[in-house]
Image (cartoon, rainbow, N blue to C red; front, side, top):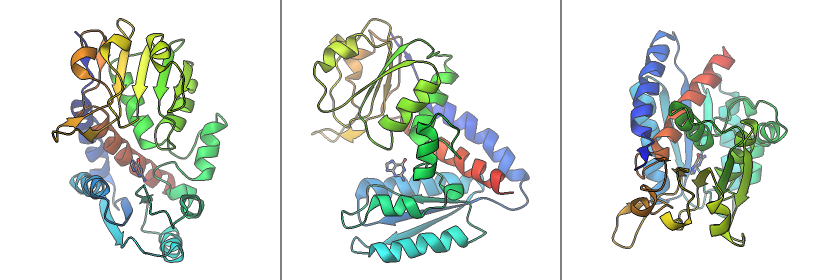
Length: 278
Ligand code: GUN
């Protein structure tokens, strides 16, 4: 039976250490989160980020805009935050409404305040094999979790399912940096099951229950990034935990695996930006 990759336990450990560090700062880091529209999941995420930040002594503000805010107004606010010396970190919660260009938004955030690592400057650095200002939060959280359980990636075949800018794409580069062999699968991939069967590590970030135990190689490591409610309202991940756990050597649960690590990384990134700004 697989060992559980316990994201809550690691979160508590990392954040306790981070709080001691923040307590020693004479001024405090400030994280500003911009939320556009009424997406219920985004609202929950944003409030969780604020609550966690405040517990640590990070100043946290949420700026909310209605769904129909203009791109111009949003970009002007970002410029204002870029120029505000008190603001350490800027996060624009995704997804954005369709009339707002994500590209223009990411082009406007100052790379030195880009707590997600999503601006073209930081993404470009990551994809050039250079060191970005900070690493994107979910991939960073996944690597922290694997590292905590001494799971080495060098020479391993890591199969990532999903090619989003938030998880799959940046994660592929970070895992390449660990000297793994990386395969990125997506909705057009043929023979997904055959590819997964060859994986030493499977990392799935799709948001659909697509991976069953019978698809897995014995003793593989499973990281489940997906989170959604099934037809009965139960929180589920991409991986069928019941059939996968007896086959895998390690598995991250949903909830309680990657989710807490994403918030942990956001807090770490905010403090990293703060230290760089001093
Ligand atoms: N929406 C879902 N995950 C994320 C994230 O990590 N950052 C931002 N900005 N939006 C998200």
